[in-house]
Length: 639
Image 1 (cartoon, rainbow, N blue to C red):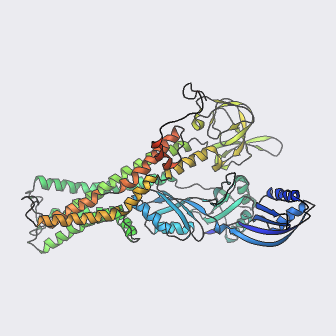
Image 2: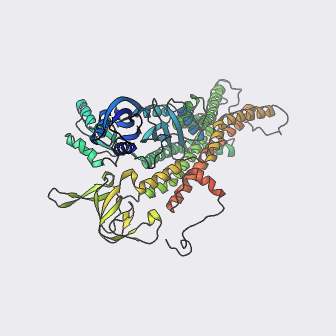
Image 3: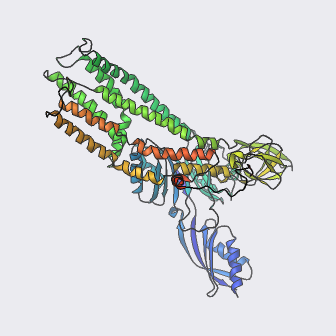
């Protein structure tokens, strides 16, 4: 895996000549500030000095001095130069998909472990969306963060990586948002990788480039760039100009397919567990209804029956094949001095299974011992927990419908008008992801507007209801703005793209809803804290329950017949302890609040109301009045 990061901010001190007044200083400052790559300019007129911060590359200190000399009446000489920040100093935000979380304790464990990693500044993990956002700087890396998560027995995958603006940054405009494109380049050897890397890295507007082996025969190349500086097709033309063939990289799995894969996996385990557990349940019921049945009570030895061995055989694959995910999760949790839902499940089922196995073996050699097993308990526990998990996954899928509906508003293709070289315009159908600022697009009646833009020619009416909520079509003429995702109803128009990719209005709305659904309400943080100590508390209560019932069983306080025939005080008390462990599932603590936030923000988005996260939703119950400042909006339906 080869990764190249470019860019650092340098500060140069210049000695200026030719300044006679403050206006001269203002002239130099204004001219420098307009140059690409200049971050800030401070001029001291009294001592004829200037301090300029600039990006390297593309600029050198000598280039900054040359800018001043270009004015003609002034001179500049480099006095000193220093690096004030590099790419490694930047704070980055990584969005990860995380599989394997079962409860709020898993969330706490991941956040705690990552929070202790050097360089990690903040961590937010969402159980319902199976995602997390980590802000970090050097020495932390994406690989080290993913490795730390996988050490906890979870699976993590990078979804997106972006730069974070410094907290002290005070700008009037939003920082440009980087986009990325991934393609598969064929016939790349080591020399070719370095050659192509250099060509891409030296291109203005490119942030970074990474190479990694593709599942096919080529190299997977991911390029991050700024659409306001360079277009996506211009980026890809660099590869073509170097003589290489590329093709668009298609993700084999998106978040929907990952969700479906998890659902299929749990469903398969549930079916296996149910098929093996159902006979155990029927055997238990039959033994209760017909305790003296000769079929059920046929013995191998005085105490061990054939039916006990059958139960053991049925319970074993459920315990160790179906239930291995609980053991893996419990081990990962305990190895980091934490406890989650997997610990409770693994402990409760293991106690039931191993105690029953011990009783069978002990009873085989000790004919005076009464054998009473509950293999059915461990198998049925795993089956019911998997059933709950399966229903939970289905519920999660339904809560994400709002995002899916917003994404479906986006057009898949666009008709691009390009010059054929003879002064004539020809049409080319391209993927909307490959549009760039300045493209001229033809939009026919009935088609979706592919991206945000400005009408160059033609007039029409556009249905904007899905974006703005306006019930009536809006008349559009040349120089009017149009929104990507809206529908052209009547006329044929030509549109010049002004915002593409992640900068479009629809993309920002989707991002806002995603951020809102992934945010934590203040009350959820209390639930997370409670779940952090929930499992140890449950285990303590289970032990107390066991010893209290054991003491009562050996006393005369229990009515006669309380302990079932064939059982003993130890088994009787153990069942109560297992019950405490099993029913104390902390999943509800971790799922209730994020489910409410996700459903609330999703339903709001479908109805044109954008809610900025769980905090706003939680504070809404304090609202006592709604004030509308557009007279006639509600009473007459006027917009």
